[in-house]
Image (tube, rainbow, N blue to C red; front, side, top):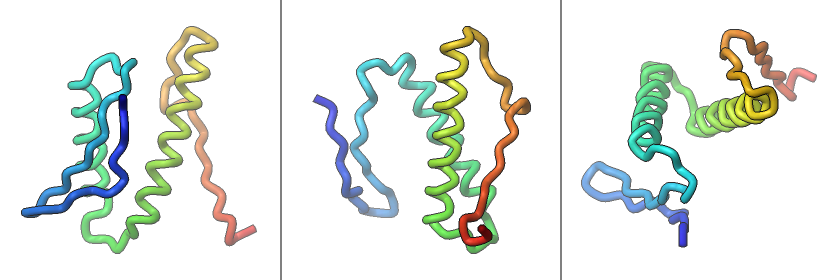
Length: 96
């Protein structure tokens, strides 16, 4: 059974989160590499800035939704969609 631990355990300057891979995972090493790269990119993009964790999580959620839409479209069309072909616009609800 795949369960997710909702409370991370923090000890000795590291965070231990139990998030087992899904049964249909194609390549666990790819997943680990992507997670490391994403977290490293987030750290680099926010270095020296006062970016809130809430804004980071929101950005990751939007990026996840975009990737899910790209995967669905690719599945339907049989072709990969290049990221540079996307026109992603973020509307700030506070400005409407």
